[in-house]
Every structure is written in C-alpha cells, then in structure tokens.
Image (cartoon, rainbow, N blue to C red):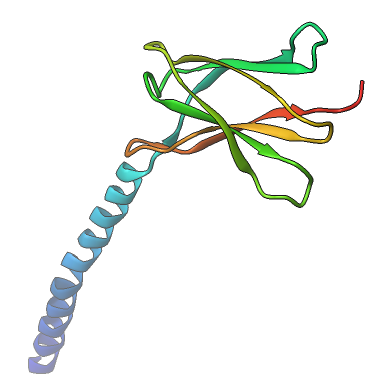
Length: 131
C-alpha cells in the first residue's frame, strides 16, 4: 500500500513538472504564427510595348504599400543575377507606372520590399523577345 502511494506521488510530480513545458510550447507556437508575415497585394499588373517604339511600360497597384518605392529588376540571361534597374514611388492608393527599355533576351520582374507586417513580393513582368 505504501509503495503504491509513493508511485502515485512520483507520477503526480512528473506530470506537474511537464505541464508548464507543454503550455510554454503552445504559447511559443502561437506567437510564431501570430508573427508570420503575409505577402504584399499586387493588383492589375500590366506590361506592354509603347506603340512599337522599343520602349515598354509596367503599371499596377500595390494596395499594401502606399507612398513608398517599388523596384524593377532586370536579368540579362538565364544564369545572370537579378539587378535593380529602376524604382518609382507609389501613389496614396498604391498605384505606380514605370517606363523602361532594354536589349532582346532581357527579363524583368517587379520587387516590393518587405516591411514588419508584409514579406517581400516578386512578380514577373516579362522578357523582351524578337517579334
């Protein structure tokens, strides 16, 4: 009888010691999900050539990034790195428009930097090909 009480007390102590650890893990997991950043919202992204002039434009709206700079990156070949080409400031509503030109084979993407609330966003604009 005495040994069964001793075992019951030991089991109770083990569970009492493990209980705060499991709740701490749940709290840590909840805070990680709460701190997870979401992607920027990029709407109405368009890119086209301006009247067959060899110049191009890209326009759109980043509703989550008003009055800040968005960037256009350029890649000269498949194995080359992305390099910043231009940047422009968005309007109060997040709208932007950029004009650019480049040689055939160049590819472009839009880059919106990350913030404390939003993670960085990359959207392909397109590549210049012989037409």
